[in-house]
Image 1 (cartoon, rainbow, N blue to C red):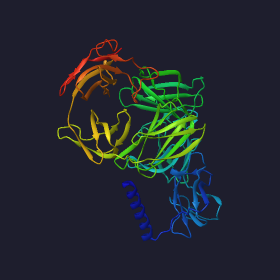
Image 2 (spheres, one colour):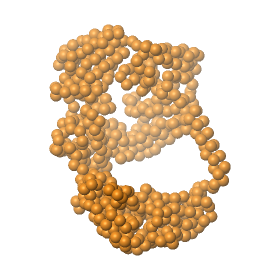
Image 3 (cartoon, helix red, strand yellow):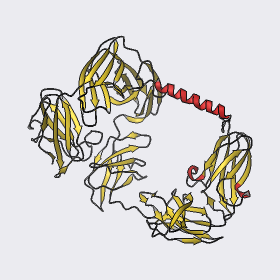
Image 4 (cartoon, rainbow, N blue to C red):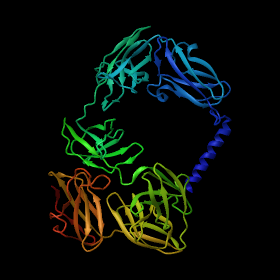
Length: 583
């Protein structure tokens, strides 16, 4: 509601501003005309370094375009203006290229007409050439001519290479070096390179452009040689290569990351900076995430770790269908959201989405579904909807949520002695251990009367409380410190390791989980007093065990869960554990 009010206010202010200025919109919603323009020299070189403005002879202004930004690589240097009103226009090259007369062109377009205009300029001096990596062109990278000024250089004309790696710049007489921005060629990356094929401007090859001179300067780009590489080929269960799969590698320890997209043969190469083991995850174009997570062996400096064929799987039920559900009625407002669950025909959980009362946010979209029958379940109102989805089908349906007859509000207060004052997540779970609401703030509205589990997660701790919402009332719960703490360290190969620590209650259903830091150290707070066994798991970033690779679970002072040592947690005390090691 608050978001809609702000949006309406902004729209009103923008409309008022347009009326005060007395300007007409540059583009008409009903216009169908278009103009495309390119700039070429007398030698037929395409020039992309200048902005070309489009001015209406009948309106104040019809817009402007920037060849450097707008033009796709390999499109012939065209800047396109679409959806403009029929009429007469003036094209103006804003940079001082060619003569004054050459920098202007007039064009008239009728409704439904598409016109192409080539503006010819006389370039007194040019620099042109090709940027390559070996024999391959480096396409779409910025080329800047830096001119000598005193003891250094200043940025001058700038353009981008075309699909063949070629560029052309119109310049004034002077001494120059070229600066080529970083780029990508196939499975390889290129560094910022200067003329002469070097990475330092001080060592760059300089050259002189005399009055009336046309200089050709080809630049060999410098290849990025990463400290190490991870290569492989992604295939499906039948061994068929999977192209256009995004491969994301994240260091198990540290923040180093690398990404690449597999080629038509399924091959990928990740250039990684940090050494050590990596976690690989996969996502296909328009097909969603794959469930396969790979933990690699340690990457060695200067070496290539070849994973061979990596068989990746999508989640069960993955397909090409889409389900849209539009909701109406009471739902989350501003400070909290309402979860919506998708279940399969057996009642198994598949996916969760959040909705709230706002245009565009009051619908759930479930993609990449296989043909079948699904159940949409809203736990906060206990409503469900059964939907049949065909193969490749997009299904649109609606569900009106109803306000609980007996309902109340829940307000959360932070106790003065609590260390954490801000929380990443505030959630309500029902007695069936299903999350029914998630808040950005510290209040829930119109909740069904009953008993819930309140979970507040901070950066280091999680606070769990039982709360009872009473009908027609606002229930206030004060969060004060409670329970005890468990601290320790995880090691692998003699070094700290960021595993996941799980405390499992002995004789109870209590369970606590937290990922250790890169150093292997961990602290679990707010643990209910009692007896626990400790499990240490080598888990992916998503918290699941690796489907390929990974250490086996380790236990505290025992080879199995039953033989592991039972620890005791006391209220207000910290139980310090000996080091737990993966083997």
